[in-house]
Length: 463
Ligand code: UD1
Ligand code: CA
Image 1: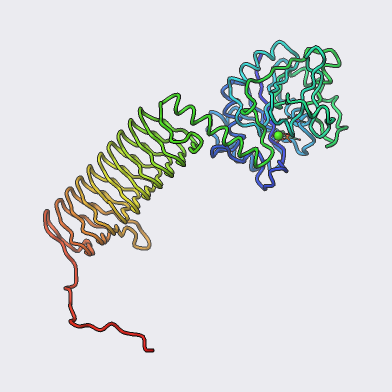
Image 2: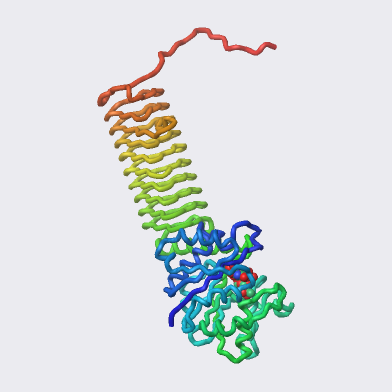
């Protein structure tokens, strides 16, 4: 039987109090809908039908940005008026063959593991329709599962329509159902909107099928936290923390990373680690980050799309993006690596140093307060405090090339394009331009001779 997945994403998400459609709010930096689509694709469905409505154009835009392998399976269906979840599913049905199996997911339930869905699909095949429930400590806001005295599903009732007695039930409807397409096609047109919201509820299908003697299954998921629906900002925060907690666990379990506090790390992408890595509190990882063995990331670092070699140390409050650090490098505290750097082995970039599109040779050190942009530094260079590569002339960027073993005194300006030969010593306070024709091992100095005025009287304010 072919599997068709329908993802509901047409709602406005009023309770989010936001102009952004709810399913585009991010968890771990990616839209919730994208997470649901990625999970859905792991189940290898024939198609993924995304039902869009409110701000459909924004949602389609975000879908068009997905990689082709995902995008090609997605078919967007317009629900022009949001008349309820039952109505939303019926919008997708004309594109689905009668003999297929339909799994319905909600775009606002981003954390459901593929494994849970896979097991649920297997169970569902024994029934005409099957509902996935979960036990919630706090069931507020969810549809409640009402069982008969034999323990079988009788019907689902929404919070808003539930009696005080029913609201005491902790078993909730996750929103995920699986049914034969032919069953949905036959029964969805029969649901009515005579409820507190005047909507066509998908959930009414369960009671209706039970009453008419169809085979309706109920499967209870092992863990509610990954099935949380996001209707409000506080549920969004809960989903985010739940997800981050799962990732922290995975880092410790899969790589043996030492985390100073698993509840204070944020991974918005993928983090791959070697052995014996240590990550202090409040670090944020974005995109794809790879750490070698024995890498130490100290407190408060933000690291995006970087690869950091063995035995390197990133000191506190360092921000780095799209850079490659080789072995035994040390960066920070308070350093900034903008995109496009390669730091060879044993490089040291210290506090308040900004580096952009630069290659820094082995063992080179820039310890304090410098800007190195569009530069190529050889091995063993010493960059004094306050050194600036003046790479921009107001229109174009130019390169600075520095040979091996150059010594750059403090407060040097290198006016690019400029090329400093191997072994040159640049005295503190020098403005080095391309007019200076130094040869290897020369000393370059551009400094006004000091002047001393004896017995100088500083101006004083008159009283
Ligand atoms: C829904 C379920 C509830 C369940 C909960 C689980 C119904 C009637 N209720 O409630 O039983 O416990 O989810 O999280 O199904 N949507 C559309 N078109 C519409 C209406 C909604 O596409 O006309 C989409 C929304 O964008 C959302 C999803 O369906 O992604 C669920 O809608 P929402 O309004 O959030 O339903 P809940 O009140 O959370
Ligand atoms: Ca919801």
